[in-house]
Image (cartoon, rainbow, N blue to C red):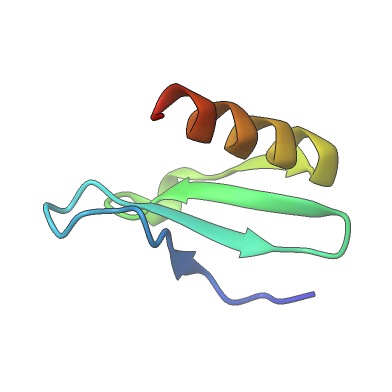
Length: 59
């Protein structure tokens, strides 16, 4: 488990970045431009499904 936010490796340097924080059973996601605006929490299975569908859409 980590309390460290990291910027997505797929984010470009244009300032529109997504940051993620891995937790023991979930992943938090927030906007790097407005980090104080809050975040969305996904369960591990929800996050895996989201990432898998994103990869499929970009093929």
